[in-house]
Image 1 (cartoon, rainbow, N blue to C red):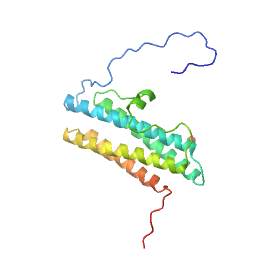
Image 2: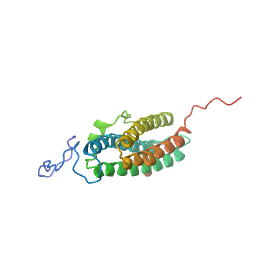
Image 3: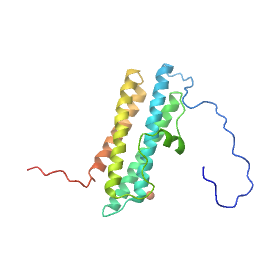
Image 4: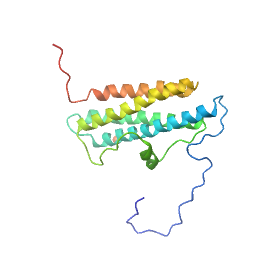
Length: 190
Ligand SMILES: [Fe+2]
């Protein structure tokens, strides 16, 4: 953590951690699902959550740092997708809790967990922004489909429904809108 360069008023030490449930564990939850199924579901959803938080933040970065002739269109599109991803973040995190788990939440923990490569701090061109978003969407879609199959196998249809109806459908729709902004034009039909 960075030290502030500003003059500091005397301040008490930060509160020490006092956990009532460790990360990675599942508490008892009477939803007629075996503990092993709830634990696996919570673990998988935490991975999906870290990647969805990262994708959401990538949209925010690109919303701010958009450029070029399509600036206005992409500025608005990236903002819309950011809001939709934020709704997914909340739904996935709350599903982890419904299973008795503990949802990953803070940026440092998300950065440690996500499978999406870290983008540069600086501003990129539209083509790279679009390619980066599509790459991240594919990571999310690939893992989401696998997780939906595991949830179905374990009888956890609630998690499966969230992943299919919300995560997969939203991501596929967003890919459609973003992919149309790729600069490489497909060969015309003869
Ligand atoms: Fe904005």
